[in-house]
Image 1: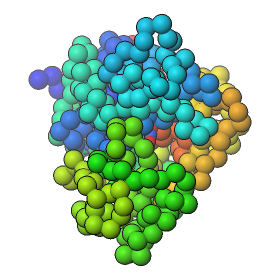
Image 2: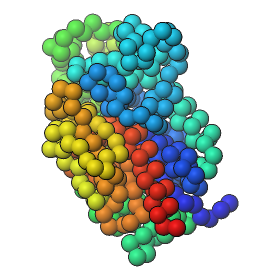
Image 3: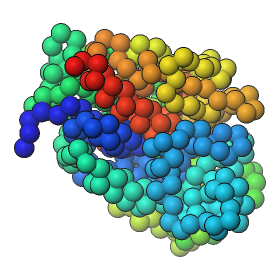
Length: 381
Ligand SMILES: Cc1cc2nc3c(=O)[nH]c(=O)nc-3n(C[C@H](O)[C@H](O)[C@H](O)COP(=O)(O)OP(=O)(O)OC[C@H]3O[C@@H](n4cnc5c(N)ncnc54)[C@H](O)[C@@H]3O)c2cc1C
């Protein structure tokens, strides 16, 4: 096995899949490392079922290229031929056709996590120049003269940190910013099947779930996941509490008598953590002001989401019809010249990352980081 790669990507969530495929398609020998046994990251492995951040106000794609390709790869059945994807009426919407659905002011793309994993595995295995290594945690990063020279013993030309928690930057000594869990609270995400509650208003949901709070369980949110009689649960407690929580729902809550989850293990999902300081730090004001940049490489329009420990969200929207841009400088580390970043670790402040962390944006920054790292190597010839 070669001990040298042009580009090493750490992490195979939405950002890492996009970064690795894009750098390999740019002709660069690419190594993808993930500590997990398979690709998917949070989008494929946590039980999430809505891809956010793909669309503008009108339901049109904000970013083309790999972002659109990956979203289309989640489609399981073609919509009627005479309809443009963006014009599909809601009766055709759903995980199978790939049509977006509107939730309040924003459009989301429903998907099945199995299909996310399958699409990721197919794209990674069918792309030439790309070698994934599974169960390969980041173990060692060597830096000399402000450049990363090797990762896990492999010599490298450039590195893209898509770990979701800036693992490469931490190991390589790059400067990082942090969010905190008071505004980006963690949650345990899992699907619940065979659920038939009759909830029409938020007040009804609160009333129905009151016994949970009285029994001392931490708050839980439910989101429709478009599979029949199923919900996606976002639980603010600990993974070890989930089996008891499900048992309590089955025994005490109307409509949940037969509920179950296919997951055997539960883990805490982090909304945000560490961002790497880049040549430019994207700010909350840039996001809410729909700021444009001369070196823009991706677009976003998702509201800034902040979640507190009680599972309550505060959403701050851009003006109607607006989008913001993410500059190339926010994907390039300030202090280590061959370190790039994408997804949850881009150079953004605690407000901006509340928008840019959604998967549509992660795909777009991942694809852009792959191209930027390849161009950087071209410039070194
Ligand atoms: C509770 C919750 C709800 C959310 N809801 C939505 C939603 O409905 N829609 C939406 O679009 N987004 C949602 N998000 C946000 C979104 O899921 C994530 O921000 C996004 O998936 C991050 O993608 P990523 O590729 O940057 O990182 P991740 O998906 O976290 O991928 C990181 C990858 O890096 C690997 N890795 C980490 N450390 C190492 C290491 N040391 N060595 C090797 N590999 C490593 C991991 O195994 C993983 O595969 C939610 C997030 C949370 C926590």
